Length: 458
Image 1: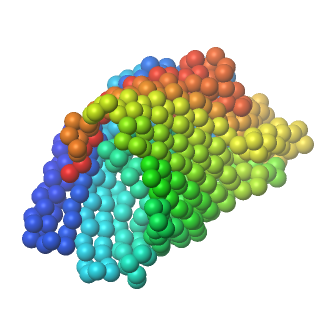
Image 2: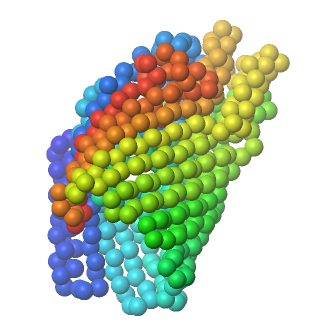
C-alpha cells in the first residue's frame, strides 16, 4: 500500500469521526468511543532459507537446512503468528485504530457498531461489531448481528490495549484467526449477595476469513454454538466457556495455499485418512484475574480439539502473568506455553504411516500430474509427511514488560519476549515440536521480540 493510499484512508476515517462527533453533540442517545494502538516491533529472528521447489503436489525436496513453512511444501502450517517479522523493524503490525458507536433507541433496544483498522492487514477497515440489543427484562438481553466470539477471557476487548497490561495479549493463546461471528447471543446478569456475574450463550456462523495477511487461506466456522460465564467476587474474576462448530477450509482456490491444501486433502483421503476440508472443532477456556489495586495476577488455559483423526493443529495453551503497581508504573512477568494435544500427535503419526505405506503408493502416484516421475512423487511424499508431522507444536514464551499510565486514558508499554522450546533441535525442526507459531523456521529454534506501543482511548 502506498503512503498516499494510507493517508487517504486515514482522512476518510477522520472525516467519518468528525461527522459522527457532530451527530453525537446533537443527540444524547448516541455514544461514541474509540481506541488506538501505535508502536514498533523488532526481532533478532533469523529464518532458514526457503527450499527449492520440485513442483510435485505443490512441494519440494525435503531438507533440514531450509525452511518449508512459507513455501508450497508446507500446506498445513496455517497459524503463523509471528508473520514475517524476521530481524527487521516493523512499524505497522502493532497498529490498531477502532471506532465504536452505540445508539439507544429506548429503554429496551439499542444498536452498536465497531469498525477496526489493523496495521498488519494493510489498514483495511473491518466491521467487528454490528448488532442490535433487546432487553426483555432488567437482567437479560439478546443481541443479533455481528459480535465477538468469546473464545477468551479478554475477547470483547482484545483490540483495546488500554484494557490489559501487555503490548499484546500472549500470542501462545490469543492467536485464533477468527474473532467474530454473525448470529444470536443472550446474557443473564445475576447478583447473590457480594457475588455477581453473567451467563451467556451464542449461536451463529463465523464468516469466511483469511487467517493471516501473508497466507490468505479462507475458511469459516458453521453452526457455532457455545456458552460462557463470568463471576465477580471481591478482587477475583472467574471466566469459563466452550464453543463448538464445523471448521470448513477453502480448498477450491487454484493458487497458493488453497491448491496445496486441496492436494494434501486428496492425498489423505486417497489413503483412507480423514480429510481436512470439514472438521468438527471444540474450544474450551478457563481464566481468572486477581486485582487488589497493587497486585495484578492473570491466568488462562485453553484447549482446541478437532474431530476424530484430524491432523490439524490442536493446541493446549496457557499463561500466568504477575504484575505490581508502583503508582503509574507496573512491571509484569508472563510465562506462556502452547503444545499440541496428545491425541492430535497420534493422529498425525497415523497419517504419516498411511502416506508412507508402500501399499498406498499406487493410489498416491495416480494423483501426480501427468508425466510426473516416480522420484519426484517420492519427494512429494516425503514433503507431505513433513507437512503433516510439523503440525505438531511446542512453544514457550517468557515476557517481561513495563506499563506506564501517562493519563487515565493513555499508556505506554515496553516489552521483551523470548520464544523458545520449538522441538529443541538446532534448526527448530522436528516432528514433535514443529515451528510453533512462526511462519518461518527460526535458526536456533527461537527468537527475541522487542515491542514499544502507545495505547489510547477516547
